[in-house]
Image 1 (cartoon, one colour):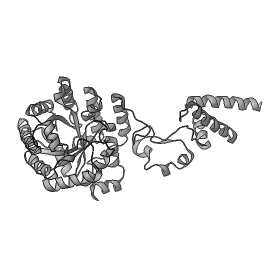
Image 2 (cartoon, rainbow, N blue to C red):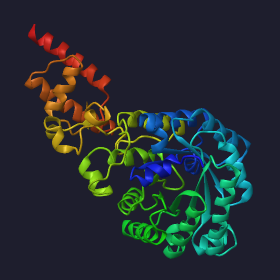
Image 3 (cartoon, rainbow, N blue to C red):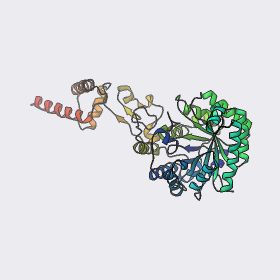
Image 4 (cartoon, one colour):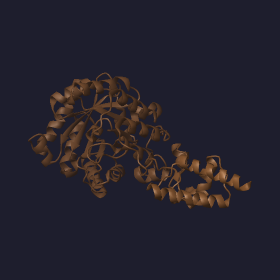
Length: 414
C-alpha cells in the first residue's frame, strides 16, 4: 500500500492544510487557470520546504465539471508533484470516483475526496436516500477507489455534518477508515455552527469513531465563525484543516489560509492552547514572509481585493496615521509585521495625522520642516482630506504643497 503522508502527519499530531481556493473557490465566482493552480500549489508547498506534501493537500479541482476542468486537475497533479499532495474532488458516484482517480493517477501523494451527505435533509436532496444509506454507499466508494489504484489515497467528506447525527457519523467514519479512507472530513456545509457546537461535534465523533480515524474540517464562514470553529475542532483533535486563500469559497467563504497558518505559527503559547502543551504543528515551520506575496498573487488572479481591514495580508497591516501609534507602534499591534511577515511599516497621511506624522512623511519626501511649517502642513493635510472626502491624502499632492511651502519660505527669507 502506498505511503499516506497526510495521514502520517495527522496521526503524529502535525497540522495539514487542505487548500480549497482552486476548488471551492470556484463557488465564489472565481476561476483559476491551470497554470495558476500549479503556481499556487508550488508556492504554498514551498512555504514548508521539502515537507510541503506532508503539510498541504491542494484540492486542484472537480474533474466532473467539464473536460477543461479535468485537464486542469491533471496538469496540477503532474506539475505540482513533490511540492504538495494533490487532490481531486468528486461526488459520491462510481463514475465520478473513477474519473477523479484517473485525473491524479501517477502523481506522488495523489488523493481523491469523495463527498457524500451525512444529514437526513442533505441525503434526501443529494441521493434520494436516508443518511445511513448514503453513508454506507460512501464506504463502498472508498473501497472501490482503493481498488482502482492503491497509490491514490481516498478521503471521505461528510457534507452537512453540522446537522447530522454524531453517533451515525462516528460509526461510518470508523467504517470508512477500515475500508481504507485516509481522512474523514466533517463539513459545516452551510456555515451555521457556533464554536461550541463545532467543538462538541468533533469531540463526540472522535470519541465514537476511535483513535484510528483522522478527522478533518471544512468550515464555511457564513456567520463569520469559520476560523473560530476550525480552531475549536483543532482543540478537539482535528489535524487536517480546510482553508482557502483570502477565504474565497461558496457564499461567504471558508477560513482564510493566511490567517490559519499565521495563528498556528506566530507564538508558542497560542499553539499550545490550541493543540495541547506539547503540540507541535509543523515538521518544518512555514516561511510566514511568503504569506503576503501569495495573497497578492491570488488577489490579482481572482479579482478578490485585499482591503485595509483584511487580517495578516491586507493593505492596512503595518500602516500608521496617528501620533501615539507612530511613536509607540508595538503598543498598538499584536505582532511585528516587519519581523514576522516582512511587511515594512508605512506611515500615511490622513485627516487624523499629527504634526509628528506629517513631519516624518515630509522628511521621507526630502523636506525638513520647522515647527511653524509642520503646523501649517498639518492643517493643509486635514483640509485636503475633508475637501476631497477621502481619508488618505495623495503624497504627490503633498509633495507639491511642500515645494510651494519651501518656495514661499525662501522668498520670505529674501
